[in-house]
Image (cartoon, rainbow, N blue to C red; front, top):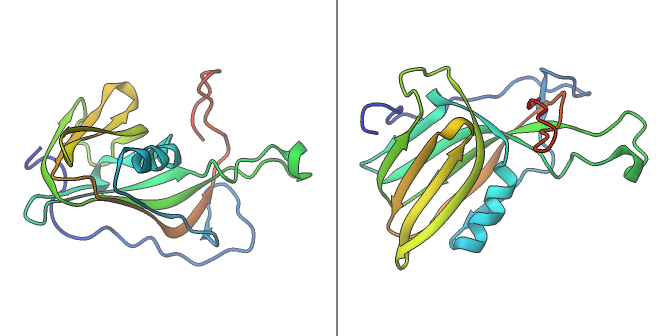
Length: 185
């Protein structure tokens, strides 16, 4: 993974002017920002549920070996806001949205990837799940699993992760559908 994924630097700023109504393609501030810390397998399962179907640009995956840090910027599908309009009486339909989010892992000893074209910085990935397998307590392997067979594996001293919304929200046209084969919106 050395030399492939972007090293060093900081994540880009995504601040834009706010709008009063969210339409597909526009960004607004997130008023109910999510921030989670994962220190064990149960915690990372919660994080995984929140990042399921997140869209990731290859150029926004950052491995910092000197700091032993791995960070990934993503547009996570907000499953909490994707409610059925019949349940809450919303006449305009469900509120499908993506939140600009960062997922950071500390105490990372090594980073390896498989089936990801690291040279295509504009390449798009769909994050399916994040898992943790303990091997030498409290250390183990974190796996970030992408559609199409892509995987990033992090060898960690111990599990120490943070998921934090960065403040912007974009409307999504569609809800991911794992049973009907519908594309992500």
